[in-house]
Length: 420
Image (tube, rainbow, N blue to C red):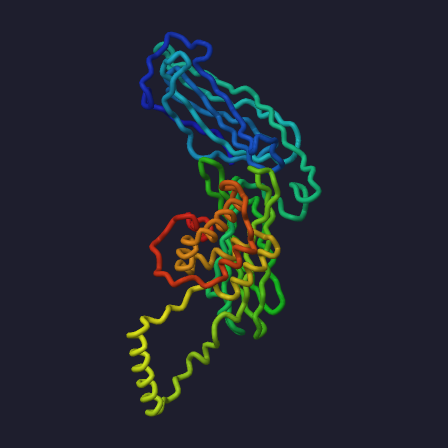
C-alpha cells in the first residue's frame, strides 16, 4: 500500500502561469491536515483522513510526492491527485495540489506524522530548478479505550469502527418453503464505511436445533471512494432442515463502533424461520376430483343468483392486503423488546414484496409519522421523537384497503425497503 508517485506535467499544460524572476517565500507551500471523526482523537484501527494540500505560484514542470514511513499506521491513498487553478491571497493565479490518504493507527499513543515532501521541478525565471517543499510535522494522539465492554483490544466482540454499517440478507429459495431433503442458500453482505476489508469480522456462526448448515466461501473487497474506503464481505451458507417442523432461526447481532456519534451500536442479520410457509406442494399437485353434473348445475344456479345480487349491490369487496402472520409476530416481538433495528429489519422484506401495503401506509398520517420516527431513531434524520413501536406494530398489522400496484417510488419509505 505505498510507494513513490511521480507525474510528468507538460509545461503549462494545466494552467498558463507567468514565470517569475525568482521564488519568493510563500510561493510554494504544502500542508497536511488530519480529519478526526467527531473532532475527537481516534482509537486504534479507526480511520483518519490526511488531507495534503499544496499551493504553488510557479509553473510546475515535474513533481514527485515523497511520503514519510508512517511506521505506526496502515494507510491507503484515496483516488488520484487533483490539480486545480486557484488564487493566492494577493489575487495572483496559482496551482493547487490535493491528495487524500486514509491512515489507520495500530495502537494508542502520541504520534508525530513526519513531513511529506513535494519535490517540484519549476520554471524559475526561464530556468529549470528542483525545489523540495516539505509540510510541517503533524501531532496525532490515538486514545485508549476506557469503556467496560468492547474496544480495539477485546477478543469479543469484534472491533468494528466505521461511519456506517449496512447488512443485506437474501435467501434462495425462500426458507419458509423448504422441506426435509431440500436446501436453501443464504447470502449475507456486510458493508462498513471507513474501513478496509481485512478489518471486517469472520463469518458469523449460524447454528440452531433442527438444521444442517454448510458454510460457503467468504469474499472480501475494498472499494475506494473520495470520502474513504468501503469494506465489503459476503458470507454464504447452504441450509437444510433435518426435522419436519417450523424451525426459528435467531437474529445475529453485529456490534460496531459509530465513529461519527462515538457510540457503540449493533447491526443485525435478521431472524427468519425454516419451513412452514406454504401449503404442502404434494397436495397442490393432486388432480382435481371429478365433479358430478348435479354439482355443475347447482354451481351455475348459484352463479346466476350471485349475478342478480351484484346488479343490486355492486361488486364484492376485494380482499384487503395485510402483512403475513410471521411478520406481524416478529414486529410485535421487536416492539415488546424495544428493538428498533430488529423492527426495521423485519419490516424491510415486506415492503419490497408488497408495494400495495407501502402505498396504503404512505396515505395514513399515523403510520407515516411512525415510520418517520423510526427512521429518525435509526439514522438520526431529524429529531428522534414520538416513536411508539407497539402502536406502530399494531397499525402495520391491520388489513388496509385494496390498492393498485404503485409505480416506482423513492419517497419516505425508500430507506426502509433498501432503496436509495
